[in-house]
Image (cartoon, rainbow, N blue to C red; front, side, top):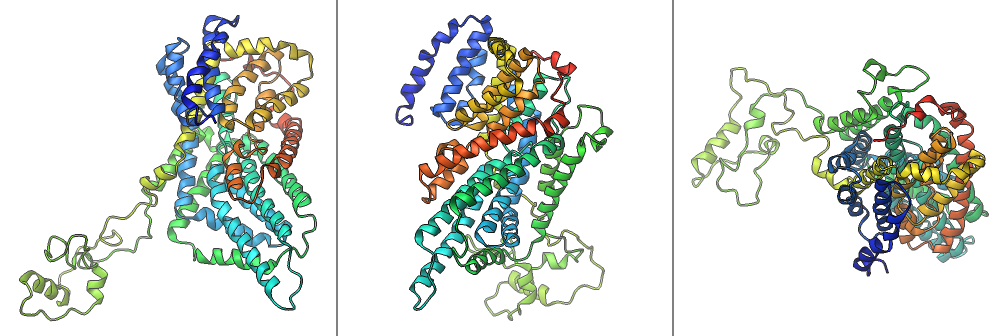
Length: 585
C-alpha cells in the first residue's frame, strides 16, 4: 500500500509533521526535530529506498540551518564507516572464492546430522559467518544449503514410503516442522551472530561512532572490548534460541528422518568444492590476520600493539583498510618460479597471425610447446613458417634472461574490484552515514539534550528498570523499522537521557543498541526474516509467536549481561569524569 502511494505519503508526511515546529524547544532543536521526524517516517514507511532516504540529511539540515553542509557530509565516511567498509571488502573476498561456503559446510559435517545436532550446526555456522559478514549475505548463502538438505531428506522419505515392506517413513508434517526449524534457525542466528562483533551489524557501529563523537574524552569502543562483552552474550542467546526451536519444533525428533541421507547431502556439497585452492588460502590468511590485529590492537587488560603509536592515530578502521588493500595487491596464483623468456614468447599472437578471426583467441604458449608442429605446406605464409621453425628449433646457445612473472601474462589480483563492488552492500554504507548525520544534528541542535531533560521524570525510577523500558520500546520499533535507522534515532536520545539521570552513558546506550538486533517477529523486521519467509516453508504466525519469545529472552539476557560482564568491563556502576565533558559537535 505504501509502495503504491509513495508520492502521496512523501508530500503529506512533512505537512502533517509541521506542528513539531511549535514544540517549545530552542530554535535549532525544533527545526531539527521536524527534519528528523520526516527522515524517521520515510525510514519506517520506506517511502523511498532506505539508502535514498539516508541522503535527506544532506538536504534538510543545511536548508533548515541545523548544520552546515560540510559538517553533514563528513558523517558519510567517518572512521567507523571505514572500519565497516574494510570488513565488508574482506567479507566480499570470502564470498568471491566461496570460502564462506566451505566454512559453513565444514561446520555442518563436524556437528552431525541428528535433528538437534543438525539445527545447532546450521546455527553455529550462520552465526560465525554473520560475525564478519552482513547478516543478509550470510542468510542468502545458508538458505540454499539448508534447502538442499531438506530436499534430500524429503526425497529419502518419499523413497522410503514407496518401497515395499519398508519401515514407517516420517510423516510430511514432521518434515515440515524440520523445515520450519531450519529456516528460522538460519534467520535468527544471522541476527544473533552480528551482535558479537563491532562490525557484525550496523547498530553496533552506530553506537561506536556516536559514543566517540559525543564523548571525545572517553575511552571509545574497540573491537576487542566489544568482543569480550558481546561474544558470551551472543553464545548464550544462540543456545537459548536453539533450545527454543528444539522444544517447539523438534520435540519428538528421534527417527524423524534418515540421518545418513542428511549426512550424504552435506558431504556431497562439501566434496564438490574440491581441495582448498591457493586463492582460498590467501584470503583465509588475510581474514585471520584481520581478526588477530583487531583483537590485539587494544585488548585493555594488557597493552596492545596500538600502544606503539600515538593515541588516536591508529584505529580498527586503519587495520581494516590495510587488510582490504592487501587483497588487491596479492596474486591470485602461486608464483611458478623463474623461466626463460622463450617459453613466454613462443606462439602466435593477434599481431603476428592475421588469419585469426574476430573473437578467436591465439593458441596458448603451453599448447604450442606440447602439440606437434605440422610441416608447412605450399600455401603457408612466411610468417607462419618462421613461427613453426622457431618452435621446432633448439634453444639458443646463449643464456637467456630469466623472467619470474609466473607465466608471461600479468598476474591476476587475488580480488578484483569489479567483484567486490558487486558484492558490497552500498546501501548499508549510506544508511550508516545517514544515521551518523542524524545523531550529529540532534546533538549540535540541542535536541537530544532537550529530549533527555523532558524525560527527567524517569530519574526517580531505578536505572535497571529504565533500561528495560527502553529495550521494550526499541524492540517494538525495530520490528517494523530498519535496525540501523532505529539505532540512529534512539542512541543519541538515550545518551542525553543518561546525562540527565546522572548514570554512565553506556548504561542506556548499550542495551538500546543490542535490542535493535532483536528483530525476530515479522518477515519485514530484517532481510534474513524475509529470506526465510520467502522459502515458502513458514507462515507469519510461525514467526510471530516464537519471535516474541526470542525478543523477551534477548531482553532478559542483555539485562543480565549489562549487570555482569558490562559492570566488569565498562564500570557501569559509576559516572565517569569524561561523561561530563560531552561534545556539542
